[in-house]
Length: 350
Image (cartoon, rainbow, N blue to C red):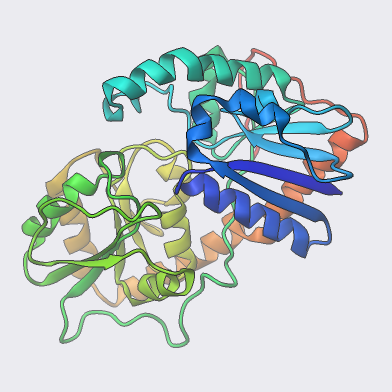
């Protein structure tokens, strides 16, 4: 099959998804081309109607913002919803200008994309239900995102824990309020000098505001350096307020690093509370600090939890299963099946 994946380069998980899926499809023997466009095109996605697919394209994979402009004769269109910004839970994290754009043009773009799609995919069950609630209930096929668990894997001998150094926590993500970056100083002040947080600048590389003395910036990391950071950490600290999927949690688990995350949006689909990490109430600084302390109080349990996290990540997010799910969908579309976007109860299969 020949698959075209046009996407807006936004410095987000959508970039990771598109480039990873193109790579995985090529590895599995198909011909996939990922084509980036400037992020500003989100404001006038109809311009993508003039973009020319690679010769012989069978399948076009687009997101819900611009999918309507990417339908082409002779090609099947798969629209993927990565996170629904029309969700009420997302509303507190929007600026006034974002709210005007989301509730006006973007809502129209998304509705048009769903009508144009031959198939609609959501990257989590939460996202499927979120989209259903926001736009009247379109039926979405749930395919949890894939992680390269051969690359994101534990170091030989396991991660270092405790000892003479402070307990090492890691935050991975853009330093924005939606990701809970504003909660990090409070959590680290609550934990004190026995704990140290290493944090990245995310794909957008922005600097944070005032922090805490036990917070250490890593800047923007290469893929190899990111893997090393996961391996070096005792725990991933992920107090995000809204996730369509949650790549950082899945990648950390693949590296056998347990996760302390928020019990919200898609995170319960990624982290099994008490098994692969802990889930905490939204925005509760003391609860996050207590969860971290509780896990390190019995350090002999951390390696076992990390191994369970690794096992779950391979089973739930492995590239082979992820790629096969998309190839199966593409094959059925090419064979003549159509997955109409109907307004009814979402039927999720995981």
